[in-house]
Amino acid sequence: MTITVPPVRVEDKLYQNRYLIDAGRPHIKVRPHQSPSANLLALTRICPAKCYELNATGQVEIAADGCMECGTCRVLCEESGEITWNYPRGGFGVLFKFG
Amino acid sequence: MVEEKFDAIVIGAGMAGNAAAFTMASGGLKVLQLERGEYPGSKNVQGAIMYANMLEKIIPDFRDDAPLERHLIEQRFWMMDNTSHAGIHYRSDDFNEAKPNRYTIIRAQFDKWFSRKVREAGATLLCETTATELVYDITDKVIGVRTDRAGERILADVVVLAEGVNGLLGTRSGLRETPRPETVALAVKEMHFLPEEVIEQRFGLKGNEGCVIEAAGTISRSMTGLAFLYTNRESISLGIGCLVSDFAATMESPYALLEGFKNHPSVRALIAGSELKEYAAHLIPEGGYKAIPQLFGDGWVAVGDAAQLNNAVHREGSNLAMTSGRIAGEAIVQVKCRNAPMTKRNLVLYKTMLDDSFVLKDLRKHKDMPALLHTNSHNFFMRYPQLISLAAQNLVRVDGTPKIDKEKATTAAFIKGRSRWGLVSDALRLALAWR
Ligand SMILES: Cc1cc2nc3c(=O)[nH]c(=O)nc-3n(C[C@H](O)[C@H](O)[C@H](O)COP(=O)(O)OP(=O)(O)OC[C@H]3O[C@@H](n4cnc5c(N)ncnc54)[C@H](O)[C@@H]3O)c2cc1C
Ligand code: SF4
Image (cartoon, rainbow over all chains, first blue to last red; front, side, top):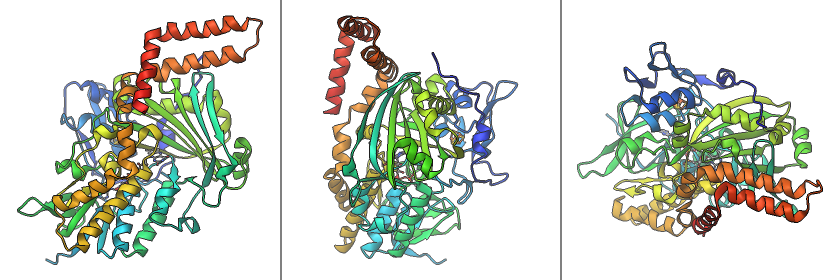
């Protein structure tokens, strides 16, 4: 027997969080590419905020608004140059109420 | 251009940074602390069990006003398969002592309190300020930092890197490598609110007593990982973390794992009816002793998670962070008192003192554990939990099968699941790594 898990929407979880968005200054960028590497593709599933998505033509795109600045994508894809990763400017980004 | 000069600059106002800043400011040094968050704690995530002994060494009377949730009187370790858990529970009234040993805390609140103590000790704190670059002199000694505020340099004799596991400053300056996917875990965590009385009823607690659960098993879907569920006063913290390399290989979604844990029959009842108020994610250093980078150099030291000083096997991190921060602070105060320069040769004192503390002794003791659990994750996190559940069920289910046949069936299941040699070698390797 397996556990029945109701479908989860990450958006509903992130909705609880507090953010201060630095509009127009994304702190993570994906390098333009034809087809993503295995690690970049994995991010579409393993980023805990679901910031990475595959577009219709097969490239990985990022919308970092819900980013919790965990660094997982940095650990996997910064060295190869597929993404650039910085902290948001001081004071911006996720603001944990409890942490 | 006015350049203000400090004795020390501390990067980060987490556990390690606060401990270092407090120790140096109390020792009479002129300390500047930089924190990129809006307030200390706004970027930080922990389970969170806080170990009193290590905080007592910094602030002996912390119990007077620190925001503590519950003191722990019960610890449960669960081995889970999909429908069951087998476990060890340890509960003792001895933990209802005048100065309890472990507490649950909420980091955002705790860090604000700790930071207030740091400022009362005389340090200057600048929040919403990210240190972006180290500044060097012509001999390659670190002499300060630049921030994202003004273009000006801020100078100091020594920079304490307490920037956490994902610290950009030290890695971009080449003082240490970026963590590898095999040496960090990604953990996701939620805060579930429930009335105080409900928590007390469900866990059999009274007053400020608390209970914590650590769990492993099929919930991590054969990845190297652990889950936790901790009681706070009016909330339950729960979460699950697995190695980033395992996540990348399996492409499992962390939030799906978390939902699996929350919906496990053993967990669901404990959080029923709760209100979710936050969802967080953070890395945990898990590389152990072998992943520790260079800890000091000309004009700098690294402390806490930034230096991978984390004992993931025992889920201890904040105490190693506090202790390494305190020790670095003490070493720096000593060097300063001798009027000696903050060179690599003098700052080796920090490493010498750390070698002598539980921090490096514990990490050295378990230096082979991370690799063992990683390479054997399928056995330790999938097969054994299932076998143990089967054995326990064979033991307690009374169905007319003779006991001797049941024992044989259990043994056979273990051998079929892992082979006789596999079992012996796993047990041996586990014992050796633990030794
Ligand atoms: C889910 C989870 C559960 C855990 N459970 C436990 C537990 O129960 N018990 C335990 O003891 N440990 C636990 N840990 C580990 C513990 O949280 C860490 O070991 C501890 O927080 C490390 O403290 P630190 O000060 O080194 O780093 P952090 O607490 O991460 O602090 C780093 C600080 O530096 C700041 N910073 C970073 N870069 C810059 C910059 N360039 N400029 C300015 N500021 C900067 C950050 O904003 C942050 O405030 C857990 C960790 C996680 C993720
Ligand atoms: S830092 Fe973490 S939350 Fe943010 S985009 Fe990367 S993986 Fe997602």
